[in-house]
Amino acid sequence: MDSPLVSVILNCFNHQEYVGESLASVIAQTYRNIEIILIDNGSTDNSRDVLDSFSDPRITKYYYDENRSLSERLNFGVSRSNGSFISILYSDDVMISSKIEDQILIFNSLDCDYGVVYSPAISFNHFTGKHWLHDVVKVDGYFTQLLLGNPSKGFPDISSPLFRAECFNHCKWYNEIFGDGEAILLRIGLLYKFFYTERPVVRLRDHDRNLGKSVHTNHDNFLRICDLLAQEQYFPSNMITLLNRYRAVRCRSNCWVALRLNSSSSAWIKKQLLNVCIYSPCSALHIRYLACIVFAMIPFPFRKIINKIVVTLLATRENAFLSPPY
Image (cartoon, rainbow, N blue to C red; front, side, top):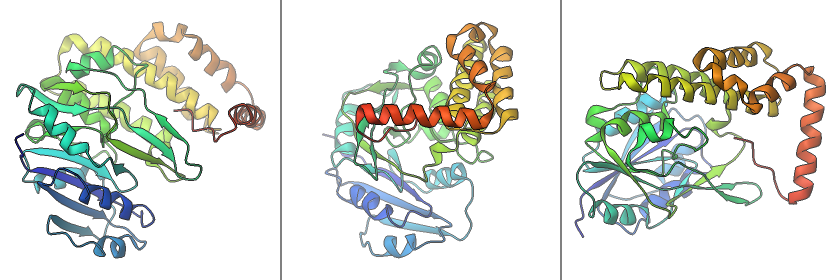
């Protein structure tokens, strides 16, 4: 097996209780030819004390006093990487020990037009230990059109893929957007083929401070990312309709999530309902859209009571923690 250098970029912010396990999972990789680019993005807790307790010659540390755009930090990490391949990890998640070895083995069997190898991620609730497998779109080929055409399927988590480093010569995270994250896959997936494999390679920690739980902010960022994507010179004009339909589905879906998570922002919810009609009027005929309208008309205090009753009933039936309805 060819053993090219792999750069692992680990970004940390205020995860003193998690980052030690995250970094240890990188150090313990069965694939040994790696460099670890460790970025602390302005932590104000004891994260740096935890990071400084690790001594490995493969680690290069970059500590910042200011918490800046995560997209900006990831671009910086890529700019400092020397590997032929790149893997991203956040400081509350962990790699399965054979992640990089498994993915390099697959890359060795693929043509050079493949830029990404990925798989579904396993999530686990930090407080209860409950595990579940993410449902992601399964692609062997160009990623973007297939994902946009299957909006019910999820993005691969950014910690799952192994990327050819050259992908980032053409595609970078948008610095002006705090959490570009997985959306960069839409750009890479226009230029490089993706290869899906069933075997999970990362475990994502579900806890009370996940960035992914900021539904309003993440959704607004994603719509802005779609605007920027449509302006890219390599974005095909014949995919605009497909992109707009995907945006409409995301607006409908995240509106429902916000309602189920007791969002009290009526203006934001109304805006997403309007966006559905603007991006793809046919999507307004979906039963979930109609359910959003009905649920949004219920006064907030009563909607909150209904959600509490539903959660209690489901939790009783499953006899387990009910994970957030993403």
